[in-house]
Image (cartoon, rainbow, N blue to C red; front, side, top):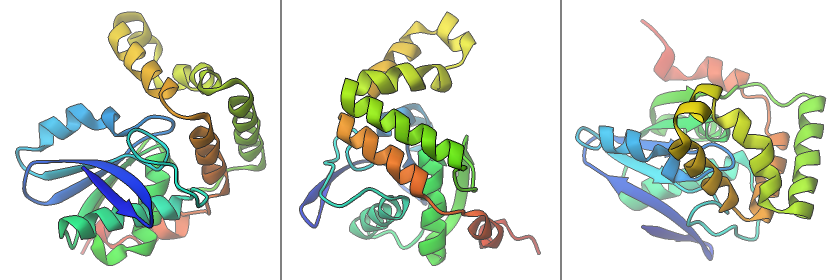
Length: 207
């Protein structure tokens, strides 16, 4: 499915019925990374998988990418679907965006799952590393991201025993436009410290 937001097409997929669960994907992949969890959950939940701007079927748009913009796009998709509240699942970059959603749309959050991500902002060293990779991707193409990220995304056992998974991840990275990869790197580097947000999320409070 597609949703137009101020002239930018966002692609998303919806399966199942019930409580809405939104999946936000890792960098530099797309919503296809969540295909198997979505199938597993679709019998009990309405599962929404969103392609971040510039990845998968979503257009890159004219405005700079930020974690807040991804969160706002997720909220717009929920509006489109008539969902007042949702659980949000985010992996890596998707986790940063999920925390931005929790900050901006706390009243709409009924659950939060953070996978392989962190609430703190990048260190100076981390920001420099992202900037260097962004420049390399713009100069050499998506293959530079594939070479840098594939070993981090796929463990040694999977590389040894599941070549199909390795190839799927490789194809996913190479499918992304260099400009989108660079924009996402800059957006992640610029994200704020979300530790205060994490500490205040009501869904984790115990009576």
